[in-house]
Amino acid sequence: MSSTTLSFLTLLLLCSTPTIVDSLQLDSPSSSSWHPWRRNLRRSTTARTVPPQGYYTPTDAGGSMLTQIPITYPMGQGEPLNAIVSGNSDERVLQDSEANGGLRNYFLSFGFSGECLGQHSGSNQAANLGDGNGYRNKTAVIRWNYGDAQLGACKETIQGGNHFRYWVQNGPAGNSGAVFMAVSYELPLDQSHDIIPNGYNLGRDWLVGNITKNFVQTPNVTNSTTFTGTTTWASYTYETNITYVPNLLQNTNDAINHNITVGATTNSVDGLVAVLEVKITGTPPKSISAA
Ligand SMILES: *[C@@H]1O[C@H](CO)[C@@H](O)[C@H](O)[C@H]1NC(C)=O
Ligand SMILES: *[C@@H]1O[C@H](CO)[C@@H](O)[C@H](O)[C@H]1NC(C)=O
Ligand SMILES: *[C@@H]1O[C@H](CO)[C@@H](O)[C@H](O)[C@H]1NC(C)=O
Ligand SMILES: *[C@@H]1O[C@H](CO)[C@@H](O)[C@H](O)[C@H]1NC(C)=O
Ligand SMILES: *[C@@H]1O[C@H](CO)[C@@H](O)[C@H](O)[C@H]1NC(C)=O
Ligand SMILES: *[C@@H]1O[C@H](CO)[C@@H](O)[C@H](O)[C@H]1NC(C)=O
Image 1: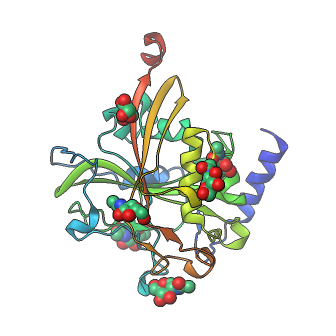
Image 2: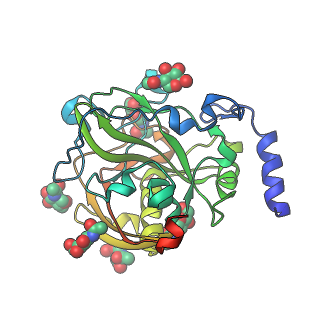
Image 3: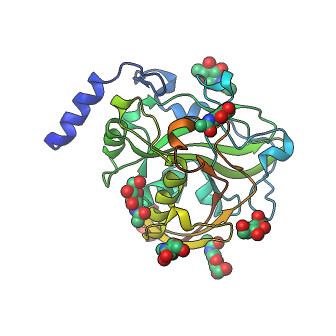
């Protein structure tokens, strides 16, 4: 462990007092919530059916493309679900697992890791994907790992950076298996993890840039922008087709969390959702995958 890493960890422990927007809670390893994401994963009882676009539109069935945040909910402000892993993606990618090329391995392939040291951090936002499950708490918070898959998410927790929460559309009224993500770029912990100006659109596009390895000019994305990227982790190679889809979100500053600061110069939400369709194009040699 490097000394920088150690000082991050020390800081992390020192900084674990709750802040207004995002709080850090150390879960005891023996508690059932040590793997917080597992809590919220109920198996769906209906067979998965995927509409051509790769997901059911939440607002068609009483859902919302904005999250609910415990603190701001009374005021009705939420964060945009601004990226979706399509239900038309490879079946293996839609499993919430790091093994077998699953979703968490896919996240790692473009530089995003699970919670720092298994901690449960960040506010418990809820989303209603219109799938009949109503509002459900997030599955997990995933953070850009600064190139360090093991401890980089700890650095993100302290220094801020890109991160997302996600929810799986798998309820009885709409089981597409699609993964809805609320991506944003946050300020450091000592600034209460507020979001940087334009931090929802930029967070989405920097994540897309991490997949394509080409910086995305946010003012230039339109309702017909597409990209393709190839990423690899643990010998699984993923091809991602990215399509910017309009009309799921509005181009607006209204009802968006932190809209006063995030939307100071441009609407907090530009109305586009990045839909990611993912195929596995390379797998480890059999001897490794069997291990
Ligand atoms: C989310 O979790 C919090 C804290 O555990 C709980 O109080 C709340 O009822 C949950 N919300 C939903 C929608 O499940
Ligand atoms: C990858 O993500 C980081 C953190 O959000 C960002 O600074 C960087 O510009 C991204 N890379 C590309 C090529 O977009
Ligand atoms: C973005 O748009 C501006 C203005 O139309 C243009 O000059 C610039 O070349 C575009 N950048 C990219 C990367 O497409
Ligand atoms: C895409 O944007 C163009 C230019 O603003 C607009 O004319 C068109 O109706 C939009 N298409 C959709 C599907 O929203
Ligand atoms: C933020 O959203 C609220 C509605 O939740 C709206 O009343 C307010 O005008 C918005 N603020 C800005 C600066 O756009
Ligand atoms: C991406 O689009 C290309 C061209 O339409 C297609 O050949 C390829 O199979 C697509 N890949 C994915 C991951 O959907």
